[in-house]
Image (tube, rainbow, N blue to C red; front, side):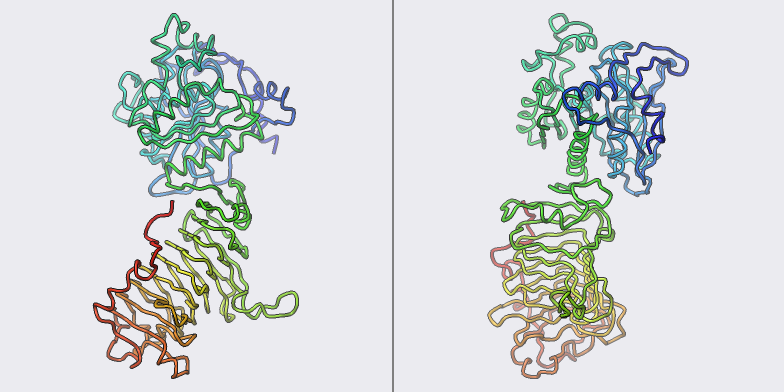
Length: 619
């Protein structure tokens, strides 16, 4: 593995003077990954330098020319997910540090590669440094790079409406200036593609100042003077002009700050955040305790910097605000879902959001009652799969059958659980009772989820549990939605795999509502007229179908009494305004009900759930 990267590592380690396309230009080589590492390890002997390595599933195009200035070519290294995506991926340009006079785009390659692995189009960008061209040449170059990327967005599956600027140290100052001068003509320059925007939609500032004239920036001296063409006293207006803090307004995009333990390197930060707060613009600040400047170039600080960056981009560009990430490829906080559950503080009042990357997670999961207000967010519903294969007749270590409840792939005891974009599965096959999810917690909500199994797929178990299923897919064979809870299924697709029964409610006598299906589609591969809407597992079972589309798989009589005529007197089974060939009200079992409009109007979320409104997004 080391030999694979040796040529590039040598390049990173060795100071090099070279020309570009035969045209020589002055270059300061006093700042490199190796030099930063050697300096840092004097006080932190356990550090190690970062290394590039193209991740699986990431495509790369190196040294792409984005501008030609009278024979002086400027380059970028581009990384993007190899998998095609119709709507494109968000992107970021990465800007290296080095006091505006040194450093190379190679410094940002490891970060660019790892962000590309997480679903971003990234470009590590070369720009002119002070030995070659003073301010504002670097700003013009980076704005040109942004315009070039938008002009060639289709070549790299880039979403041109979502591009961030990520910079480190001096590169962070430049990234911040890009973000605060969106649309300002004086900073554009003339380096190509003027018809495209150079705006950025987010800024990631990794230990860089945002003001040269703020009192906190008193330490800025020689490096800034060389870049800005004179000292602060001599060129005060230019120092102020190059300060991002001067331009913050209501159009400024969200900001992330990741800082070292040295206050010098976040001059003006707090003032900028105060202004963002005034405009209601999102920002984050993270400080890495005990870290030196250039922490992003060495382990162990590269990893938390990467995670903060990825989380911020996910939040801003994908509306994925999360506290933990689960990913099987090692890019998240945990590689298993149960590990993430275990990390949630007990009885937390605030919501804990767990983002789960695509993957097949074979785990028997338990969300304890002390893990409250937890949210699972899947990357893609058909590719984020939580699965196990237990079944009722399987024996435990004592030779006992584990039973229907014990067969569940996921036990949910915590109140306030929510999930979206996830598949929950019991993969045991047609072997009898085999539960995918058992829910005991109250105020539980699923949106755009799938529940896969055969008999007894979904078990709303808690007698005082209220559950809401929105735009979900649920499949099974016999009694595949069963239990005591009050549950509303809103705009769901219910797939019947063979002849059988959709529901087997066991509602308590004192509960007004059991299972309520609203605007659902009932279909499947079962034979025609072979499926019952439900049968009463317990005497007071309550199940209602409202405004549902029933295919021809539904039996004309609709309901079954489970061979117990006495349950016909206590169970409440009803329909209202259903449609489709499976809706034959005149042929329904005589003990079932067809609701009037007035009766059906009582089946609102407010009436069913009382003090809980699942239609309101959780804070």
